[in-house]
Amino acid sequence: MIKSMTGYGKGSFFGSDAQYIVEIKTVNHRHADISLKVPRQLLFVERELKKQVAARLTRGKIDLFVTRETAEQAVVTPVVNEVLAGEYVKLFKQLSDQFKLSEEIPVSLLAAQKDVIQLREADMDEQLVRDGIKQALSLAIDAVEKMRSQEGMVLQQDIQTRLEVIEQMLDTVENRAPQVAVEWQEKLQMRLDRLQDGVEVDPQRVAQEVAIFADRCDISEEVVRFNSHLIQFKQLFSAQDAVGRQMDFLLQELNRETNTMGSKSNDADLTSQVVAIKAELEKIREQIQNIE
Image (cartoon, one colour):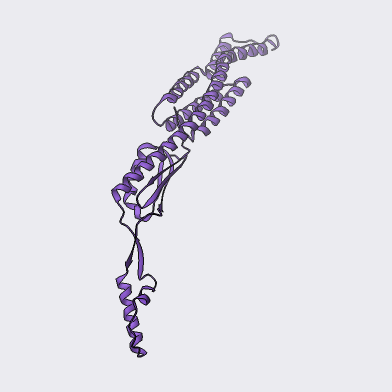
């Protein structure tokens, strides 16, 4: 089953100090392009998260966001910024000496100064957070994979329908192609018959011209290769690995054979069928751009 490159997933983990939320958004891209955005205090797990994503999502523009929401019950401890408090004490003593003040510096005054007393969260259990975020990421990737598979199923159905249409048109081309040389020979003979009496026509030369024309408009080899590429293309629907690039390559080959058939056709009906095949191939190409 093929997969789309478009998806979204979310997972979360409740630690003792905060809730950690992991979100993934993926869109189509030529290669695997993974971008992470995590809070500064979680940089220690960034590399492992990127590795975990790369192991499961092999292609696409992948954006990973990790957010941290402090829990209400998180343990917060007031601490003194001793360096800053010391600077305030020096300043107060300087003012006291300058203005001949004899009062002692009250603790309440010192504590009221900005940033002298700060609130600090309890130390983070890095291993617990690491394991929890990786588990939340796994859930987010599961959701992404599910969405990608669902959209991939829709893409596959559309592509298979278009391939069936192409096969029908190719049958028409195969049935029509042998008649082109025969009809051209008949038209040539009618032109020769209309020539005035006394004009000598070399039958061998006529036969030679017919043979040259038949060889020039013979598309049997292109049809065989086209069918071979179609078989390989349809086999990819049951592959377990990412097949987007293989499909893209085979589609290029199908287009190549179609272009050659068009240049050889020398027939309005054949040309019309070839143009219709190219139109369907182009629609398939647009779908393939979003296949992993």
